[in-house]
Length: 393
Image (cartoon, rainbow, N blue to C red; front, top):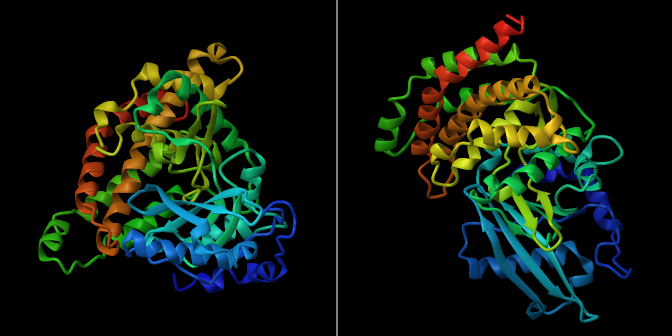
Protein backbone atom coordinates (compact mmCIF):
# COMPACT_ATOMS: atom_id res chain seq x y z
CA UNK A 1 0.00 0.00 0.00
CA UNK A 2 2.03 2.90 -1.30
CA UNK A 3 -0.05 5.59 0.38
CA UNK A 4 0.06 3.98 3.82
CA UNK A 5 2.80 6.20 5.20
CA UNK A 6 0.91 9.34 4.27
CA UNK A 7 -2.39 7.96 5.55
CA UNK A 8 -0.96 7.28 8.97
CA UNK A 9 1.23 10.38 9.33
CA UNK A 10 -1.25 11.90 11.77
CA UNK A 11 -0.72 8.92 14.05
CA UNK A 12 3.04 8.60 13.91
CA UNK A 13 3.53 10.93 16.85
CA UNK A 14 1.62 8.47 19.02
CA UNK A 15 4.21 5.75 18.50
CA UNK A 16 7.01 7.81 20.04
CA UNK A 17 4.91 8.35 23.16
CA UNK A 18 4.23 4.65 23.83
CA UNK A 19 5.59 3.13 27.01
CA UNK A 20 4.11 -0.14 28.23
CA UNK A 21 5.26 0.00 31.82
CA UNK A 22 1.92 -0.77 33.42
CA UNK A 23 0.44 -4.13 34.35
CA UNK A 24 -0.95 -4.70 30.87
CA UNK A 25 0.61 -4.56 27.45
CA UNK A 26 -2.36 -2.48 26.34
CA UNK A 27 -2.69 0.13 29.10
CA UNK A 28 -2.11 3.01 26.70
CA UNK A 29 -5.17 3.82 24.57
CA UNK A 30 -3.19 5.46 21.76
CA UNK A 31 -2.99 3.64 18.45
CA UNK A 32 0.48 2.30 17.70
CA UNK A 33 2.10 2.48 14.27
CA UNK A 34 4.70 0.48 12.39
CA UNK A 35 6.07 1.02 8.90
CA UNK A 36 6.57 -2.71 8.47
CA UNK A 37 4.46 -4.86 6.13
CA UNK A 38 3.93 -8.61 5.88
CA UNK A 39 3.90 -10.16 2.41
CA UNK A 40 0.72 -12.26 2.24
CA UNK A 41 2.08 -14.13 -0.79
CA UNK A 42 4.73 -15.81 1.38
CA UNK A 43 4.27 -19.40 2.54
CA UNK A 44 2.98 -19.42 6.11
CA UNK A 45 6.27 -20.66 7.70
CA UNK A 46 8.11 -17.71 6.12
CA UNK A 47 5.36 -15.30 7.11
CA UNK A 48 5.55 -16.18 10.82
CA UNK A 49 8.94 -14.53 11.63
CA UNK A 50 7.80 -11.37 9.85
CA UNK A 51 4.62 -11.27 11.91
CA UNK A 52 6.68 -11.70 15.07
CA UNK A 53 9.03 -8.88 13.99
CA UNK A 54 6.00 -6.69 13.34
CA UNK A 55 4.60 -7.33 16.83
CA UNK A 56 7.97 -6.57 18.40
CA UNK A 57 8.13 -3.31 16.46
CA UNK A 58 4.64 -2.27 17.53
CA UNK A 59 4.74 -3.37 21.18
CA UNK A 60 7.98 -2.21 22.76
CA UNK A 61 7.46 -4.45 25.81
CA UNK A 62 7.92 -7.46 23.52
CA UNK A 63 10.95 -6.13 21.62
CA UNK A 64 13.57 -8.13 23.54
CA UNK A 65 11.57 -11.35 23.86
CA UNK A 66 12.95 -14.43 22.13
CA UNK A 67 10.98 -15.52 19.08
CA UNK A 68 10.20 -18.77 20.90
CA UNK A 69 7.91 -16.75 23.19
CA UNK A 70 5.59 -16.16 20.22
CA UNK A 71 3.17 -18.51 18.49
CA UNK A 72 1.27 -17.57 15.33
CA UNK A 73 -1.83 -19.39 14.13
CA UNK A 74 -4.30 -18.81 11.32
CA UNK A 75 -7.77 -17.84 12.51
CA UNK A 76 -9.36 -17.45 9.10
CA UNK A 77 -8.43 -16.63 5.55
CA UNK A 78 -10.99 -15.11 3.24
CA UNK A 79 -10.65 -14.04 -0.37
CA UNK A 80 -9.48 -10.57 0.64
CA UNK A 81 -7.99 -10.73 4.17
CA UNK A 82 -5.98 -13.07 6.38
CA UNK A 83 -6.62 -13.20 10.14
CA UNK A 84 -3.89 -14.43 12.49
CA UNK A 85 -3.77 -15.06 16.24
CA UNK A 86 -0.48 -14.17 17.89
CA UNK A 87 0.05 -15.50 21.43
CA UNK A 88 2.93 -14.16 23.51
CA UNK A 89 4.49 -15.41 26.74
CA UNK A 90 5.54 -12.19 28.47
CA UNK A 91 8.45 -11.77 30.89
CA UNK A 92 6.16 -12.25 33.90
CA UNK A 93 5.07 -15.63 32.52
CA UNK A 94 1.58 -14.51 31.55
CA UNK A 95 0.16 -15.15 28.09
CA UNK A 96 -1.35 -12.38 25.97
CA UNK A 97 -3.01 -12.77 22.58
CA UNK A 98 -3.69 -10.30 19.79
CA UNK A 99 -5.25 -10.57 16.34
CA UNK A 100 -3.27 -9.50 13.29
CA UNK A 101 -5.35 -8.71 10.21
CA UNK A 102 -3.47 -8.68 6.91
CA UNK A 103 -5.16 -6.96 3.99
CA UNK A 104 -5.23 -8.89 0.74
CA UNK A 105 -3.06 -7.55 -2.10
CA UNK A 106 -4.65 -4.84 -4.28
CA UNK A 107 -7.78 -4.60 -2.12
CA UNK A 108 -7.20 -0.85 -1.83
CA UNK A 109 -8.31 -0.66 -5.47
CA UNK A 110 -11.89 -1.32 -4.37
CA UNK A 111 -11.68 -0.23 -0.73
CA UNK A 112 -10.72 3.40 -0.37
CA UNK A 113 -8.67 2.86 2.77
CA UNK A 114 -7.72 6.52 2.96
CA UNK A 115 -11.41 7.39 3.15
CA UNK A 116 -11.97 4.57 5.62
CA UNK A 117 -9.09 5.69 7.80
CA UNK A 118 -10.31 9.28 7.61
CA UNK A 119 -13.86 8.35 8.54
CA UNK A 120 -13.02 5.59 10.98
CA UNK A 121 -9.90 6.74 12.77
CA UNK A 122 -8.83 10.36 12.47
CA UNK A 123 -12.03 12.47 12.45
CA UNK A 124 -12.75 14.47 15.62
CA UNK A 125 -10.95 14.02 18.94
CA UNK A 126 -11.74 10.32 19.08
CA UNK A 127 -12.00 7.63 16.48
CA UNK A 128 -14.99 5.86 15.04
CA UNK A 129 -13.53 2.51 15.86
CA UNK A 130 -13.33 3.62 19.47
CA UNK A 131 -17.00 4.62 19.29
CA UNK A 132 -17.84 1.13 18.09
CA UNK A 133 -15.57 -0.46 20.69
CA UNK A 134 -17.12 1.63 23.46
CA UNK A 135 -20.53 0.40 22.32
CA UNK A 136 -19.31 -3.18 22.61
CA UNK A 137 -18.57 -3.95 18.97
CA UNK A 138 -15.58 -5.74 17.58
CA UNK A 139 -12.11 -5.86 19.03
CA UNK A 140 -10.12 -2.91 20.32
CA UNK A 141 -7.78 -1.41 17.72
CA UNK A 142 -4.24 -1.55 19.09
CA UNK A 143 -2.04 -0.70 16.14
CA UNK A 144 -1.73 -0.25 12.39
CA UNK A 145 1.03 -1.17 9.97
CA UNK A 146 1.83 -1.15 6.26
CA UNK A 147 -0.81 -3.63 5.14
CA UNK A 148 -3.02 -4.30 8.11
CA UNK A 149 -3.94 -3.76 11.73
CA UNK A 150 -3.56 -5.38 15.14
CA UNK A 151 -6.54 -5.76 17.46
CA UNK A 152 -7.29 -7.33 20.80
CA UNK A 153 -8.13 -11.02 20.59
CA UNK A 154 -11.76 -12.10 20.89
CA UNK A 155 -12.20 -15.46 22.59
CA UNK A 156 -15.02 -16.77 20.43
CA UNK A 157 -15.62 -18.95 17.39
CA UNK A 158 -16.44 -17.63 13.95
CA UNK A 159 -19.95 -18.49 12.80
CA UNK A 160 -20.67 -20.65 9.79
CA UNK A 161 -23.35 -19.78 7.21
CA UNK A 162 -25.57 -22.49 8.74
CA UNK A 163 -25.26 -20.83 12.18
CA UNK A 164 -26.68 -17.57 10.86
CA UNK A 165 -30.13 -19.09 10.32
CA UNK A 166 -30.47 -20.67 13.79
CA UNK A 167 -33.45 -18.84 15.38
CA UNK A 168 -31.68 -18.01 18.65
CA UNK A 169 -28.64 -16.60 16.85
CA UNK A 170 -30.84 -14.83 14.29
CA UNK A 171 -32.58 -12.90 17.07
CA UNK A 172 -29.22 -11.98 18.63
CA UNK A 173 -27.74 -10.87 15.30
CA UNK A 174 -30.82 -8.71 14.72
CA UNK A 175 -30.54 -7.10 18.16
CA UNK A 176 -26.82 -6.45 17.75
CA UNK A 177 -27.27 -5.00 14.27
CA UNK A 178 -29.94 -2.64 15.58
CA UNK A 179 -27.50 -1.43 18.26
CA UNK A 180 -24.76 -1.13 15.66
CA UNK A 181 -27.03 1.03 13.50
CA UNK A 182 -27.67 3.33 16.46
CA UNK A 183 -24.00 4.21 17.01
CA UNK A 184 -23.24 7.78 15.98
CA UNK A 185 -19.98 8.11 14.09
CA UNK A 186 -18.46 11.56 13.45
CA UNK A 187 -18.08 12.59 9.82
CA UNK A 188 -20.26 12.77 6.74
CA UNK A 189 -23.54 10.90 7.03
CA UNK A 190 -24.12 10.68 3.29
CA UNK A 191 -24.99 7.11 2.25
CA UNK A 192 -22.20 5.54 0.21
CA UNK A 193 -24.03 2.74 -1.62
CA UNK A 194 -24.64 4.36 -4.98
CA UNK A 195 -21.43 6.40 -4.82
CA UNK A 196 -19.51 3.15 -4.44
CA UNK A 197 -21.53 1.21 -7.01
CA UNK A 198 -21.02 3.86 -9.68
CA UNK A 199 -17.30 4.05 -8.85
CA UNK A 200 -17.11 0.28 -9.14
CA UNK A 201 -18.97 0.49 -12.45
CA UNK A 202 -16.54 3.08 -13.81
CA UNK A 203 -13.55 0.89 -12.95
CA UNK A 204 -15.16 -2.42 -13.90
CA UNK A 205 -16.30 -1.25 -17.33
CA UNK A 206 -12.82 -0.26 -18.55
CA UNK A 207 -10.75 -3.32 -17.69
CA UNK A 208 -8.26 -5.15 -19.89
CA UNK A 209 -7.18 -8.72 -19.16
CA UNK A 210 -3.87 -10.24 -20.22
CA UNK A 211 -5.47 -13.68 -20.18
CA UNK A 212 -7.25 -14.05 -23.54
CA UNK A 213 -9.93 -16.40 -22.16
CA UNK A 214 -10.74 -13.95 -19.39
CA UNK A 215 -10.82 -11.07 -21.84
CA UNK A 216 -13.18 -13.00 -24.11
CA UNK A 217 -15.50 -13.76 -21.19
CA UNK A 218 -15.31 -10.15 -19.98
CA UNK A 219 -16.32 -8.89 -23.42
CA UNK A 220 -19.62 -10.79 -23.22
CA UNK A 221 -20.77 -8.35 -20.51
CA UNK A 222 -23.11 -5.59 -21.65
CA UNK A 223 -22.13 -2.65 -19.49
CA UNK A 224 -24.85 -0.60 -21.12
CA UNK A 225 -27.35 -3.08 -19.68
CA UNK A 226 -25.63 -3.11 -16.28
CA UNK A 227 -25.67 0.70 -16.10
CA UNK A 228 -29.38 0.69 -16.94
CA UNK A 229 -30.07 -1.82 -14.17
CA UNK A 230 -28.06 0.17 -11.62
CA UNK A 231 -29.82 3.42 -12.53
CA UNK A 232 -33.27 1.84 -12.47
CA UNK A 233 -32.70 0.21 -9.09
CA UNK A 234 -31.28 3.42 -7.60
CA UNK A 235 -34.42 5.31 -8.64
CA UNK A 236 -36.68 2.65 -7.12
CA UNK A 237 -34.84 2.47 -3.79
CA UNK A 238 -35.01 6.26 -3.44
CA UNK A 239 -38.80 5.94 -3.15
CA UNK A 240 -38.52 3.62 -0.15
CA UNK A 241 -36.95 6.22 2.18
CA UNK A 242 -34.74 3.65 3.88
CA UNK A 243 -33.14 5.15 7.01
CA UNK A 244 -29.45 6.03 6.71
CA UNK A 245 -27.38 4.41 9.46
CA UNK A 246 -23.77 3.56 10.09
CA UNK A 247 -23.79 0.19 8.35
CA UNK A 248 -21.47 -2.79 8.52
CA UNK A 249 -21.96 -3.53 4.78
CA UNK A 250 -20.30 -6.96 4.93
CA UNK A 251 -22.14 -8.97 7.58
CA UNK A 252 -21.29 -12.48 6.42
CA UNK A 253 -20.74 -15.43 8.77
CA UNK A 254 -16.99 -14.81 8.88
CA UNK A 255 -17.62 -11.40 10.44
CA UNK A 256 -19.74 -12.79 13.25
CA UNK A 257 -18.21 -14.47 16.31
CA UNK A 258 -19.94 -16.21 19.20
CA UNK A 259 -18.73 -17.08 22.69
CA UNK A 260 -21.06 -19.92 23.60
CA UNK A 261 -20.16 -20.03 27.32
CA UNK A 262 -20.94 -16.34 27.77
CA UNK A 263 -23.63 -16.38 25.06
CA UNK A 264 -22.03 -13.26 23.62
CA UNK A 265 -22.15 -12.35 19.93
CA UNK A 266 -19.53 -10.13 18.31
CA UNK A 267 -19.77 -8.17 15.06
CA UNK A 268 -16.25 -7.76 13.68
CA UNK A 269 -14.34 -6.38 10.68
CA UNK A 270 -15.66 -2.91 9.86
CA UNK A 271 -13.48 -2.52 6.76
CA UNK A 272 -16.45 -1.81 4.49
CA UNK A 273 -18.29 0.20 7.17
CA UNK A 274 -19.86 3.50 6.16
CA UNK A 275 -23.05 5.44 6.45
CA UNK A 276 -25.49 3.59 4.26
CA UNK A 277 -29.08 2.45 3.89
CA UNK A 278 -30.50 0.19 6.57
CA UNK A 279 -32.18 -1.97 3.93
CA UNK A 280 -28.87 -2.64 2.20
CA UNK A 281 -27.16 -3.82 5.37
CA UNK A 282 -29.96 -6.27 6.18
CA UNK A 283 -30.49 -7.41 2.59
CA UNK A 284 -26.76 -7.95 2.14
CA UNK A 285 -26.73 -10.02 5.34
CA UNK A 286 -29.60 -12.18 4.08
CA UNK A 287 -27.72 -12.83 0.84
CA UNK A 288 -24.91 -14.28 2.94
CA UNK A 289 -27.22 -17.10 4.07
CA UNK A 290 -26.21 -18.60 0.72
CA UNK A 291 -22.80 -19.36 2.20
CA UNK A 292 -19.51 -19.83 0.45
CA UNK A 293 -21.12 -22.02 -2.20
CA UNK A 294 -23.53 -19.20 -3.07
CA UNK A 295 -26.58 -21.46 -2.82
CA UNK A 296 -29.28 -18.80 -3.02
CA UNK A 297 -31.99 -21.37 -2.39
CA UNK A 298 -30.90 -20.83 1.25
CA UNK A 299 -32.01 -17.18 1.16
CA UNK A 300 -34.32 -16.74 4.19
CA UNK A 301 -38.05 -17.27 3.73
CA UNK A 302 -40.54 -14.56 4.57
CA UNK A 303 -41.22 -16.15 7.97
CA UNK A 304 -37.49 -16.33 8.70
CA UNK A 305 -37.08 -12.70 7.71
CA UNK A 306 -39.99 -11.67 9.90
CA UNK A 307 -38.31 -13.40 12.85
CA UNK A 308 -35.23 -11.26 12.22
CA UNK A 309 -37.29 -8.07 11.72
CA UNK A 310 -39.24 -8.52 14.97
CA UNK A 311 -36.03 -8.64 17.03
CA UNK A 312 -34.45 -5.84 15.02
CA UNK A 313 -37.41 -3.44 15.34
CA UNK A 314 -38.44 -4.27 18.92
CA UNK A 315 -35.72 -6.23 20.77
CA UNK A 316 -37.56 -6.12 24.09
CA UNK A 317 -41.03 -6.97 22.74
CA UNK A 318 -40.53 -8.59 19.34
CA UNK A 319 -44.05 -9.97 19.03
CA UNK A 320 -45.64 -6.57 19.40
CA UNK A 321 -44.28 -5.39 16.02
CA UNK A 322 -47.17 -4.53 13.72
CA UNK A 323 -47.81 -6.36 10.46
CA UNK A 324 -47.53 -3.02 8.68
CA UNK A 325 -44.00 -2.43 9.99
CA UNK A 326 -42.95 -5.99 9.17
CA UNK A 327 -44.23 -5.69 5.62
CA UNK A 328 -42.53 -2.32 5.09
CA UNK A 329 -39.15 -3.62 6.25
CA UNK A 330 -39.64 -6.78 4.17
CA UNK A 331 -40.11 -4.69 1.03
CA UNK A 332 -37.23 -2.36 1.90
CA UNK A 333 -34.83 -5.23 2.60
CA UNK A 334 -35.67 -7.29 -0.46
CA UNK A 335 -35.35 -4.30 -2.78
CA UNK A 336 -31.92 -3.41 -1.40
CA UNK A 337 -31.02 -7.10 -1.55
CA UNK A 338 -30.86 -6.55 -5.31
CA UNK A 339 -28.37 -3.73 -4.79
CA UNK A 340 -26.18 -6.13 -2.82
CA UNK A 341 -25.94 -8.40 -5.87
CA UNK A 342 -24.97 -5.51 -8.14
CA UNK A 343 -22.44 -4.17 -5.62
CA UNK A 344 -20.56 -7.45 -5.22
CA UNK A 345 -20.88 -8.35 -8.91
CA UNK A 346 -19.05 -5.17 -9.93
CA UNK A 347 -16.59 -5.60 -7.05
CA UNK A 348 -15.79 -9.07 -8.36
CA UNK A 349 -14.94 -7.78 -11.83
CA UNK A 350 -12.33 -5.43 -10.39
CA UNK A 351 -10.93 -8.22 -8.24
CA UNK A 352 -10.78 -10.47 -11.32
CA UNK A 353 -8.33 -8.04 -12.86
CA UNK A 354 -6.42 -6.85 -9.78
CA UNK A 355 -6.27 -9.70 -7.28
CA UNK A 356 -3.51 -12.33 -7.41
CA UNK A 357 -5.67 -14.65 -5.27
CA UNK A 358 -6.67 -17.88 -7.00
CA UNK A 359 -10.44 -17.39 -7.07
CA UNK A 360 -12.90 -17.34 -9.97
CA UNK A 361 -13.93 -13.70 -9.60
CA UNK A 362 -15.29 -13.53 -13.16
CA UNK A 363 -17.51 -16.50 -12.43
CA UNK A 364 -18.60 -14.82 -9.22
CA UNK A 365 -19.64 -11.73 -11.20
CA UNK A 366 -21.98 -13.78 -13.38
CA UNK A 367 -23.31 -15.69 -10.39
CA UNK A 368 -24.28 -12.48 -8.57
CA UNK A 369 -25.54 -10.63 -11.63
CA UNK A 370 -27.64 -13.59 -12.77
CA UNK A 371 -29.15 -13.90 -9.30
CA UNK A 372 -30.00 -10.20 -9.48
CA UNK A 373 -31.82 -10.73 -12.77
CA UNK A 374 -33.58 -13.81 -11.39
CA UNK A 375 -34.96 -11.92 -8.38
CA UNK A 376 -35.55 -8.55 -10.03
CA UNK A 377 -39.08 -9.03 -11.36
CA UNK A 378 -40.55 -10.23 -8.09
CA UNK A 379 -38.75 -7.63 -5.98
CA UNK A 380 -39.61 -4.73 -8.30
CA UNK A 381 -43.26 -5.80 -8.32
CA UNK A 382 -43.25 -6.03 -4.52
CA UNK A 383 -41.66 -2.58 -4.11
CA UNK A 384 -43.87 -0.81 -6.66
CA UNK A 385 -47.04 -2.36 -5.18
CA UNK A 386 -46.00 -1.25 -1.72
CA UNK A 387 -45.08 2.26 -2.85
CA UNK A 388 -48.36 2.62 -4.74
CA UNK A 389 -50.37 1.38 -1.78
CA UNK A 390 -48.63 3.73 0.65
CA UNK A 391 -49.21 6.74 -1.57
CA UNK A 392 -45.54 7.41 -2.27
CA UNK A 393 -45.72 6.94 -6.01
